[in-house]
Image (cartoon, rainbow, N blue to C red; front, side, top):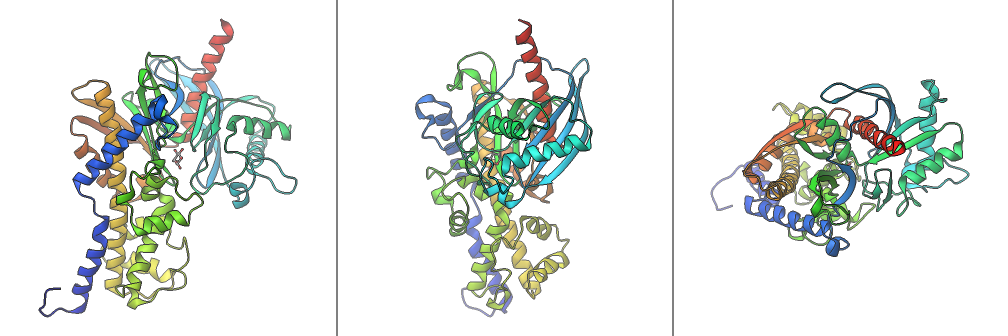
Length: 472
Ligand code: BGC
């Protein structure tokens, strides 16, 4: 402070703001992030540089050529967050586009030991893929479907190197999964083996897709300009339709193929070093995958609440919050949940909501404390929206350049709890994307149940192709 009289709170608020200013990113810095993202995307696409690139740009074998789709019942599985879902989807066709009706679905929570245990069966515990097979069996029994051999589409929301639409190896787990015996293996094979081990039902696994891809596909049926799929939830990722001739990992020049960018790993080669703060380093060190998914760790819901908690502790240590004293709960890892960030920022101004959250954490906050906590949440979530926006602008600008279009009209299909449930994330995010991609006309649509519906729709296409091949 520069002299004069000051009552305590305004002075401290100034100090708090000073602390939080490191979360503010200037437009020039965001442009730099965008440029580096594009550079890594290019490296990921090229054969020569692919292995070293942090952004892997994985081909999905989902192509732009319309093959039409089979009609009928499909089973869809969705694994990627804290829950596992099984759905029965009816796919039909009308003149212009395929249509689908979700008929039944069920959610199963994933036990901690299945998430972090072994992927192969051991005698004592149901491990991840056996647990999945057990859930499918339960679903089929409940809906009296056990006698049917249904085609199955699997939304598997982790980095997979595909060899075809129904074959691909898991590169590495993300988002707190750690089941051993899966990395480096064909995921569809693990699922088929687990089903075989049970022997009480049969399934025809026809397609495996990332959740970004499932989201894009499900939105494409509503809007044919949808050529980008994005998730900002527990994890964060984007896929988009890339020109085949630039996808060097797959032969062929014609048309487009959907590329799963796996941009969550951006930064793993140091590209984000000067933007990462001490809180980001701590979150990373305490995670199950240190040094990996560094861009995702700045943005996604798996980490946002924890980042806020670490900033709050820092402010307590500096005597700027809660009278310099944190509760035991606030000192506990994971206690400030990401949904609290949304709730704090949804507070109408009377601080009630903020007060309730803080008291539930064993604190006795003053009005000033409530205001500081809100500021911290805003700082962390705004940085996330801006970082994510810089990445998406990079993708969309690249698409426009490749298509040599003066103005690109594009729709982005989006899903994920941070995007959907946070009160301001999407507005801040849209604004930055549009600002950084000025020659593009961008629409955003939210997908509903995209993971399951997308998996079923792509399976219907895959079945059609398989049927055609058999007929030849
Ligand atoms: C995974 C991606 C996934 C994203 C969103 C990331 O951790 O690596 O494959 O699309 O989370 O679920």
